[in-house]
Length: 193
Image 1 (cartoon, helix red, strand yellow):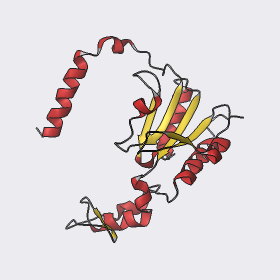
Image 2: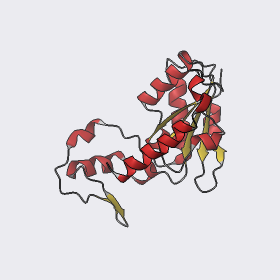
Image 3: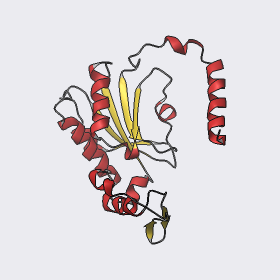
């Protein structure tokens, strides 16, 4: 058993001991909203938004992007579990700003080992083999933080399964201060109709 696995299981045992009444929480989120945000380990959505277990749905992926799967989750969130408002939250210093899809595809084609960033950019350090399967994936990289939030809010708003009555809020999260910063263009695009 790895050290990390031991730490996780030990932490889970402590969590179970203090679990208490959490087993009686209702399936629908009590506060009736969902957050789509990045998987970045510096973001704690519960602390950022003042959440406890059972309060809201949190959907995370690389960049907090409005991928088909993220939209699928949001649709399930409102249709079956009653969320009424959605937040799209990207963040400062995001790793998604450090590459584009072609860079990622090139790295994967050389090896499947973890790459490293150098002053010259991303470099593959693996011995190979790689895979060209990355050419089939849209990694949803971006070059401008606020524009990516607006793009994702618009993508969600235009989806035929998303009702216009659901407000979609667009924010960036500052990883240095913990502050949510409203993205005006995204807020306009996500306004309920």
